[in-house]
Amino acid sequence: MSRVRVKICGLREPGHATVTSRAGADYVGVVFAGRVREITAGEAAGVVAALEGGTRAVGVFVDAGPAEILVKRDIAEFHVAQLAGSEPPELCDRLRDEGLDVWKGLRPTSSDALVKGWDEYREAADAILLEGFSPRGPGGTGTAFPHEWLAGLERDGCGLALAGGLNADNVARAIRDVRPDIVDVSSGVERARGEKSIDLILEFLAAAK
View 1 (tube, one colour):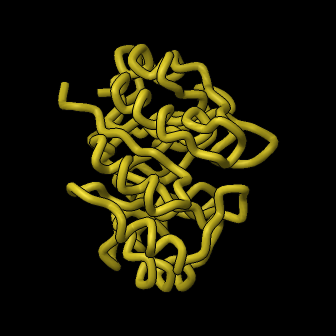
View 2 (spheres, helix red, strand yellow; view 1 turned 60 degrees about the vertical axis):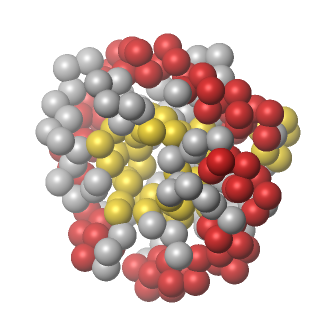
């Protein structure tokens, strides 16, 4: 198995971005999705500029149109668009044509829904990000789903990003059980909602790697 890559999502401070990248994070997420961790494109540009060592930036959106995503890409210079809403495969194709990698977020409510969503997006996305369903909405809720739903899933070359409920105490087990390509954490490295902790970020990175 190749080394799992790690994404720390919802960063808002350039200083946190620098420390996180120096500690070995493969991806850092900046959120444009109207939630507690949302920042402007200009603020995101500062976070992205602070990254070191090849860490790539991920812009997180919920049901944004292609024009908005591409304008913010041009300002913030992120490398990956993570689509966490009900975006169609055609939008994934459009963004990939514009040079972005695309991760499509899914929140399956059953094993059948997981398989259906995977089949719909596996050819349109570079990776599919899976997290648990929460009525509070997509992303950053810390909601897991039963990992046994992934048993026997035909991944067909599409990357699997695992999110939802991960923290330093359980990420190593999740990696062993699920064999994801990427693990993604946000609320699991926060002392309070929306407030990142460098200590928790470093603990998560050490546990994941």
